[in-house]
Length: 637
Image (tube, rainbow, N blue to C red):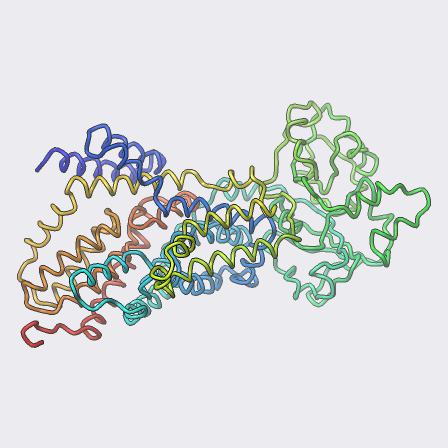
C-alpha cells in the first residue's frame, strides 16, 4: 500500500468522523481535509482546487442568484403557492415531491435543488415548521427523479458512455424508466409516510424563541387592483394562516368582528391582523395590500374614496407630498423592530401625536406590549417603556438609530424588502427560459453534432450564468442582494468535496477498494451477485464521487459478468441506479450537501432517513432488473 493511498484513506476516515461528531462546521471539516491532502502531496494544488471551478459549483451559485430574483419580485411566492396550495403540513410534503421528481427526470439535479431550496425554506416559514422537515425530502426526491431517464443524472450518462465504449447497445432515453419509475414512486411514498416520521424537527433560533415571539396588531388597507378584492376570507386564504389571525374588517365606518370565512373583502377595506413580524412581512408581499401609515392617516379619519389615493388631490390644503405618502410604493424601505427606552421622548405619547415620521423618517405600523394584547386603534395607543414598535423605514434607519438613547434595541426584520411585483413576469420569464434551455440538450443531444457553439451556449453553466446576469440587468434583484443570496458555505462544501473525490481517484483508493470487493464475493449466483454489486455500488457512492463510483463499478461489473459467462447489462443497469441512490450520508450526493446547512441537519439524520431508503430502492431494483433485463448466458447468444 503506497503512502498516498494510506494517507488518503486515513484523512478520509478522519473527515467522516469529524462530520459525524458535528463539533466543527461541515465546510470547515472538508476544507481542512482537502488542505491536508494537498500538503501531504497526495494531489496537486491545481487538482485539489479544481472542484471550485467545477460546472456544478458555478451552476449552484448562479441558480442562487436566479432564486433571489424570483424572491425579490414575488414570483417565487406564486411558484410556492402553485406547489403548496393552501398551507397544510399534513399533505404539502406529498404534493411538492411529485413535481420536483418530474422536473429532475429531465434536468440536472443540482440547479433544481439550488432553485427550490429557498422555495422550500419559505414554505417551512408559511407552515410554521422547521426547514429540516422539507429539505432532505427535496434532495432525495431529485435523486429519485434522476433515476427515471438517461439524462436525469450524470451517472446514467457515465454508464451509457461505458456501454458505447465497449461496443454494447447504448441506453435509450427512457430505458431506465422501467426500473427508475417504480423506485421513484416507492421512494416518494416512503418519504411521505415512514420517512416523514424519521425527519428531524430541528428548529432554528427563531423557532426556538417561538414561545417568546412578539405579536403585533397591524392594519392593512386593500388598494385598487389588490388580488384579495372580491374574494371571501376563505377564498383569499386568510382564514387559517399560520401565525396570523384576521380579527377585524372596517368598511364605510362599520366594523365586522369576528370575521367569518364567508365575509367578502372589498377595495378600501381595512383589515386588522394579529401576528408576528415574519407574518407581517408575508402580508406586505400580497399585491395591493398596504400597511396604513398612522402618522399621516389614522383609522378614525379614513373615508372611502372611489378613485383611490388620487381622490386626495381634490382636498383643499392637502399637499401633494401627502398623497405620495399614501400612494407611493415602498421602494428602498425595510421593516425594523425598535424597543422604546426609559429616556425616550416617545414615552407617554400616543402614536397619532408622536411625530414619528418627521423625527425618525419612519412610520409606526404596529406595537407589541409584553403581557398585554393591544387590539384598539393603533393611532390611539399611548407608548410605554419597553414597547416594541414595528416600523417601516428606509434602509439607513438601522445605522442611524442603532445606538440612539431613544431605543434599547434596533434590529431589522428578515426578508422585509419591498417586493417589485411589476417585475415578477420578467423574473418568471427568465426562469422559464432557463428551464427550457437546460432541457433542450437533454431531449435533443444531437444538437452537439449540428452546432458545437449552440451546444456550448445551452450548457447548464452558460444558461444559469446568463439567467443570473439577466436577473441583475433587468432589476429583478440588486447586485448587492445577488452577492448575499449565494450561500458560500454550500459552495465551499461542494467544491472541497469534489477535491477530496479527486484525491481518492489519484491515490488509487477506488481501484484498491474494487479489487478487494471482487475477491471477497467471487463465485456467487447472478441474482446474488446483482444484489452484491448494487449494495457495494451505493455503499461506495456514499463516500466516493458518484461518477467515479459508476465508472469503477461498471468496469468491475463487466469483469464479473464475463467471468460468470452472462450478459453484463443487468449488472450495469444496477450500477447506474445504485450509484445515484446514495441517501445515507451528506457526502453521498451533491444535493445532500446543499441542504445540510440550511436544514440544520446532522450526519445521523441522513443515516436515519436515508439508509432505509437505500435498502428499499435496492429491493425494488434487484427484483425488477432480472425481470426486465434477464440474465442471459453469453454462450446462448
